[in-house]
Image (cartoon, rainbow, N blue to C red; front, side, top):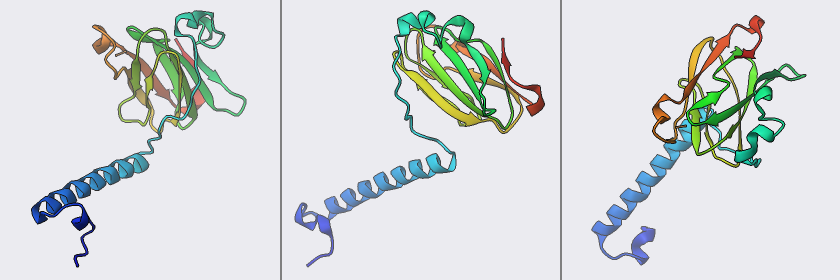
Length: 174
Ligand code: CUA
């Protein structure tokens, strides 16, 4: 009587070795994903809010005049952005360091993504949905908001500027 639980479904010892090997590899890779997600503070998307992408300009929140950085009563910031071929609007946003920032982003056309290198700010921007990410930037400096989902010929040049300024400077967009 063998202890190998695969014995009942597979006779060949060599085949059982390969099955074990692939099971172990799958668990190691799954474990690494989990470890990386936890240690880098990466969260799965959890916000489901729908919006009509073709009528963003008629919505209250994503109308052109209402985009950009807003300070909430509790001191946190909300950044409202529209992603459209080929840019993020407004094209330059400024947020203070060490302050919780909630990004709310909607696509005006096709699937886009957003990623700020060297931070944990990254999400897909699916047309028809509002993408929401909350993060805090621990370092001051100039960062790029890059599109990381292929969205057409101008995908490579779809980016805008995120400036993280010292706390006292406040936040704004232009
Ligand atoms: Cu937008 Cu690629």
